[in-house]
Amino acid sequence: MRFTLSSTVLNNRLQSLSKVINAKNTLPILGSFLFDIRGGKMTITASDGENVMTSEIPLSECDGEASFAVPNRTIMDAVKEIPEQPLTFTLDTDTNEITVTYQNGHYQFTAQNANEYPHYDSLSGEVHEFTLGAEVLVNNIGRTLFATDNNDIRPVMNGIYFDLKADCLAFVASDGHKLVRCLNYTVKSETPASFILPKKPAALLKNTLTKDSGDVVVKWDGHAAEIIYADGMLRCRLIEGTFPNYNAAIPQNNSNELTIDRKALLSALRRVLPFASMSSQLIRFRLSAGKLELSSEDLDFATSAEEQIICDYNGQSMQIGFRGDFLTEILNSYDTTEVKLLLGDPSRAGIVVPTEQPENEDILMLIMPLLLND
Image (cartoon, rainbow, N blue to C red; front, side, top):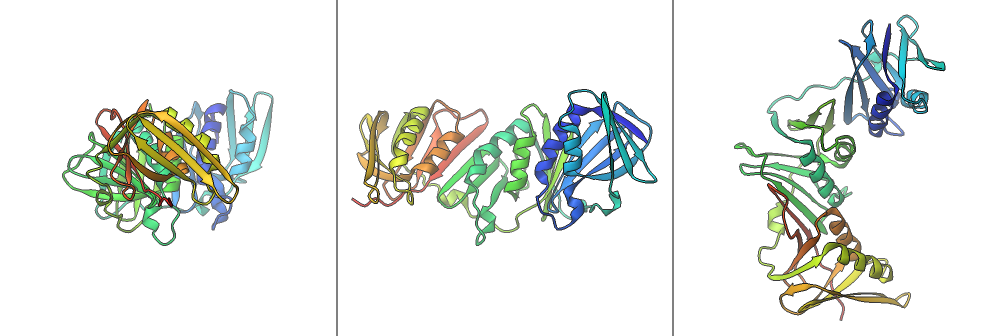
């Protein structure tokens, strides 16, 4: 059996799918890609046992149907150095020997039996579904992924919470120190439903989807989810459990409002943060009318730093402490010119929001304060 396809297309798909495969696998066959040729198309599958990603490639020529598996390093090393040109695969179905022919040469290797590759059950029971644009999904995963946790005690915090409600779809993540809540009003359902997407499949989607990938269909039952996009699909096991009431953690009356240039604050944090305690990363904020003073110190190494920024501040003069690295992550996740920092008192969480919300969205990020020793 013979089939032909573009070397560049194949290499790009393999590079993307390879991120699913673990260095060590419970089943040796999971270190391989599964190739399935049907109806003039080739579907490539990669899996780590919990996450399964597929990608479909149209073939320029094909004279049959077959399935086989190839170790990921073998096929990736075979195609990554070949410039754009047609690759012709010839499979001997009796011996499983594959010959890959290109302009100036060829490779030969032996495929593995496709029957050894695990098959996965379809979603069952009560299946929920919604459709959203790839750009919406990529943007909101990018905003929330950094706030997920690595917590063995509370595994529900180790992923992104998708909360589908009557008026919006909420993307939420929290590690107990910071929280991100992004509401999108273009996706809604009269039947509330939710699931927790683990970090690895979330990162895979972020790195695979482009903002012009069209619509994405998300389906899930009580145990697994399927995310279907233009030329592929990701199936993953979900985190089971109840996500905390994220709205209860958001203070409602932080009346002290700081409006500031995002990049200016980010630059100042980067300058004073190296002089903060390595253990606490504490940055002290001193706020008064029209002025923000940032300071840090490390008593163990006798270092300190201080910087003043002109800003728009409406509120009581106050001092409050935040972890500089956490606040830096929050500011980096925004792309607006200015942000607002809404404060209550030094013991209450601070809220960071953009001065202008994106169309049909509401983005809010929360950071817990640190105790100041005066």
